[in-house]
Image (tube, rainbow, N blue to C red):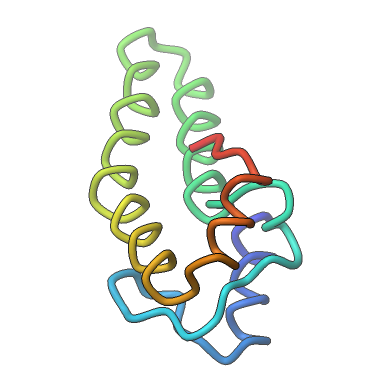
Length: 101
């Protein structure tokens, strides 16, 4: 549900949810006042649930490994693009909202 809620705001702002595109809007509504990255957080929650459902200790490191991939591949470049596009407005948002992922 978190992923769908976040995607709804991309739809409302008429921007793409695909990563690595130039941002045309800074979304600060919906789930974004709670998490900077609700889509990735939702994916991590699903992966953690599946790992726990498996009941095997070998599945537990998978969510931790997954968390590092979107951080380096998507989140850090997205943050830089938002700073370039929205400057002080992005800085204000990023200083008030913590990043759980």
